[in-house]
Every structure is written in structure tokens, then in C-alpha cells.
Length: 242
Image (cartoon, rainbow, N blue to C red; front, side, top):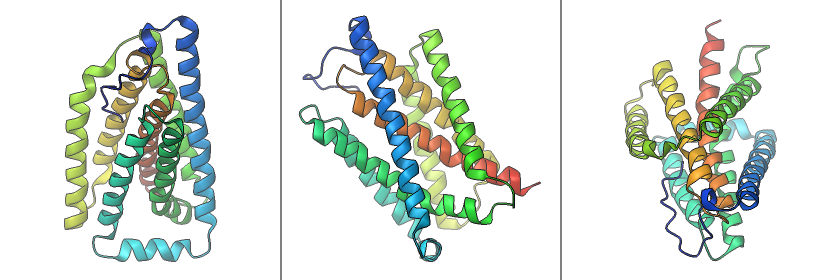
């Protein structure tokens, strides 16, 4: 979910203007880093969920007044810093640190949701696996749309920014006043996440510069994580109605 205009003069040329080999290498590196980030997320998440007392920790955090709001606030600050580091044009180590910090932060913030999904889901329903498969299918389909059409979805930037602000406002109101956001909000967020994926994939094809593969993979990972978050909620909601 990167809204960067890529203002770093020290980067290489825009990938879309580079020669075929450079462009192919940039795209390959971006998606290899995305795959690595996803695998790291899965491993860290599995470790966190296996820790003794994780259930009690989740209950305590969710039981603190405005506890989840504070967690979200901390996550937003960490995300901002991680994105800034990943977009460093002078230090490759800083770029990887930014990506690593972001992956860890995502894994931590997912713990309550995935703990609930794995503990309280109806017997025989693998909510997490199903949500992961659906996320992969949708992500692959949206990526194929960008690649096959060659369309530039950067025009979505303003709409995505406004949508993100509205969504955050609704989430904060839900936390403050204690109302359930419901299935309609989940569906709307999945549409928003799809827009992010189209936008970020389009940026990879048209706007990122050679050498920005770490930042590009972080943006894609953030969009995939957002979709997975609400896909888990969608599957939980649907399976609980059976």
C-alpha cells in the first residue's frame, strides 16, 4: 500500500523504461522478496501462536480499555518507519531492516485474529488455510489482470487514500463505541485491498525504479496482508453461519 511517488534521484531508471533483462530482473527480485516475506510471516506467526500463554496474552490485550486501539496506533508508527527504511536509497541493509521489521510487526498484530480463528472456529473448518488459499487465488488473479492488460492503475491513488482514511475512521469508531463492523464492512475492505493490490502491482510494472525491489515487495506484502486479514474474517463469518 505504498503511495510513494518514488522521488529518489539516486535510484536507477524506472523499471518500465529499462531494457528487457533489467526489467525482468527487477520484477523477479520483487516477487522473490515478496515470497520470502510471506514465508517469514508464516514462520514467525507459527512460532508466536505456539508460545505458552499466548491465549492469556491475547485476552489481556483485548481486555484492556482501548488496548487494541493502542496496538493499532503502534503498528501504524512502526509501519511508517519500516516503509521509510525500505525506501532508503543509500543503504541496502536499511532496506532489508525495514522489510524485516514490517514482517515482524504484521506477524505480531495478526496473533489475536489467528488465535481466535484457530481456537474458536467450528470443528473441521480450517479457517486460516482456507483464507490463505482464497487470498492467493485473488492476488494471482489481480496480478494477472495488470500483467495481461498492461494497464496503469496509479489513478487509484486518491481513491485508495480516501478509502483508507474512511476505513480507519470506521474502525476507530467501532473500537470506541463497541459496535460490530459486520460482514458488509469486511466485504468493503476486501474490495479496498483488491484496489491496493492492483495499484501496487501496477507500480511495480510502471513506476518503481531499478533497485527498489525491497520497497516494492514491502508494498505488495502490506496489500496481501490486508487482504488476508479480512479474508480470515470473511471465512470465520461464513463458517459460523453453517
